[in-house]
Length: 213
Ligand code: AP5
Image (cartoon, rainbow, N blue to C red):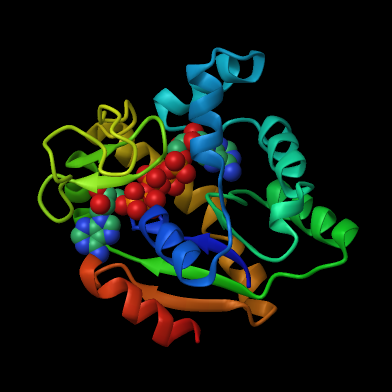
């Protein structure tokens, strides 16, 4: 399986990516996590990326395309992958096509998660994330076993800077303007599998297995 996960911010892409990864034994490539790591490590790219991310704007294509290209050349993605958060613009979709051409492979699925803006804002304002391993929680629908602590790696959970309502609304605008048009491109290739963002988390594994086969 070689999948791109698409959908508005907060629709549940990351949650699904980790479930699909466990189901099919393939790695998740999450540009948001890779960029947040670069910001934390204060790398040259991280210093630039942080300025865009805190406002809810896309990080420049040149930086993101470079990071993804480097990751996609690693051996563990050659037998399948889930791209979460990439591509997000026409330039990025062109870059992905070029990378896949170079590797001699094609996408098999574009999983598109559909969810209303009201539910998205409610979900993101109560999301808590693990800065170390990328695990995602929700204060009500998916709380950690111990308050404030990651179940997977024990790190202290955080609220992301871009999970404030005004930044979430801007991220939704950016999504509609730059990312949503890619649905047409992948639709014309017959790759889109549409899925509701409303399916309860504890039902997702069985639901996705039935949907994806
Ligand atoms: P990124 O980290 O990719 O964020 P995003 O796409 O905005 O998506 P999110 O991570 O916010 O949400 P999600 O859809 O994964 O939902 P989740 O599963 O967490 O990007 C952040 C920033 O990085 C961008 O704004 C940009 O600046 C930069 N960036 C990243 N990629 C880039 C690129 N390619 N180019 C340029 N810039 C880039 O779920 C949300 C919440 O809902 C969680 O709390 C979860 O527990 C809960 N939840 C999920 N499913 C359910 C359910 N079924 N029922 C109840 N609650 C649920």
